[in-house]
Length: 157
Image 1 (cartoon, rainbow, N blue to C red):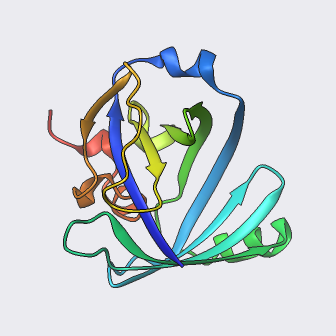
Image 2: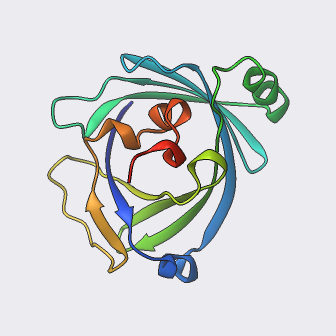
């Protein structure tokens, strides 16, 4: 139940030709409190309810609990979520033994592209493709819960 994840900005769209899968994701937050976020998500033809705890000091690890629910249940829960729904296309790219999940945001967060990689330990090494940019793992403004309230389109240049 511990998620170990690193996040990076993406420099170009080259990754799209490397993707083995893509899905549209629409998600909202029943609670965006950083101590315990509660997210509702529709990903493709599945629904999910996810609870995430606050990240550790490095920002790499945090508790995550996820349960699959029906799309109908997810859509009903989305209707009572806090303001600010996240809409994105997720591309999955295999790189060595890992899979990068690259989110191309639309709507209020259009123009933002973030890659995430899940690891088995904080010190685990991994391949970095050429399209990977600056690491933003511990920068809360790149968390989806933050983006739902403070969309990318409103950020200062």
